Amino acid sequence: MDKKIKLMQGNEACVEGAIAAGMRFFAGYPITPSTEIAEFSAQKLPRVGGKFIQMEDEIASMAAIIGASLTGLKSMTATSGPGFSLKQENIGYASIAEVPCVIVNVQRGGPSTGLPTSPAQGDVMQAKWGTHGDHPIIALTPSSVRETFDLTIRSFNLSEKYRVPVILLLDEVIAHMREKIEIPNEDDIEIINREKPQNDIGEYRPYETNGESLVPPMASYGEGYRFHVTGLIHDETGFPSNSPIVAEKLIKRLINKIEVNKKDIISFEEYNLSDAEIAIVAFGSTARSAKSAIDMARDMGIKAGLFRPITIWPIADEAIDELSKKVKTIIVVEMNLGQYVYEVERIAGKNCNVIGFGRANGELITPDEILDKIKGV
Image (cartoon, rainbow, N blue to C red):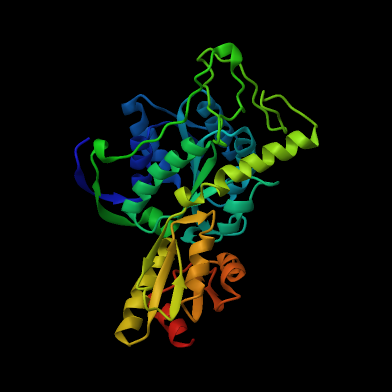
């Protein structure tokens, strides 16, 4: 497609990015405030030869995209609140079976039905630890409509590259705001596809890694390869095993394929941090308020800056540690009552003062409120 300027909603930008990344299957169930993602997918996927299906619930939706991915289709689902909770068991299945897929969670107020139409950032820890057991996860969080487009593509690329479910963690504000964005040319978009096996069909072992890579090549059902997929601990053949040696080897590889590639996976934005004495850590729509508050603080002669996680999991521990050695105080601003702040405190607390500023009443945190917090340090 040619480069074009459009006024676009965040949820629509997510679908445009997904299709540009190669998404050809979407399964979901309507739930506020993510419903537009399903609606736009239903409109646009058939035009590019893709498939949309509305499932009976969120459990089935997650299962459907796992199945579609195993046949070779880049697949996505979208949900919010209780729907994200329902997906957790199958997110664990995708993790241990190493099935690439993208899960969009447009955060709203909770718990339970909570505040269906109001913004929140209360699913930060659920994105990391929502499913049980030790497992790898990548979660990205955009702060604008254009970044939603870009990070949806990046979500697919990371999912395909590392054979892992990737969570795109929006919030209601980013999902529903409209901004003018420039959609890039197809030729300017980097697309990554899963590595395919090179060996003969009869010699294929679905979870055997090559050389130094911790990510096994992935055949698709329907290509002639015969292989077993399970949620149980399994060996390189894909069949279950009760061996503690096999279990440790598998789980450590799943974790390490993310840990050893953190420099490739982690991204963040730094704003006015070169001489900052106070750093704000904020993400999603809250980072927009934080940036305005920092500009106002600078006008008052207060040296404040912003550290904005773009990859929220795995956490940018090295960058936050370095930041903590340069500033006196870190204020973590988030639309919850304290989640990411504890991770930042774990990393930075030995070097500087770490405090949290949050709320969970369905209202945005304003620049003036953040400025007051900065002035009170």
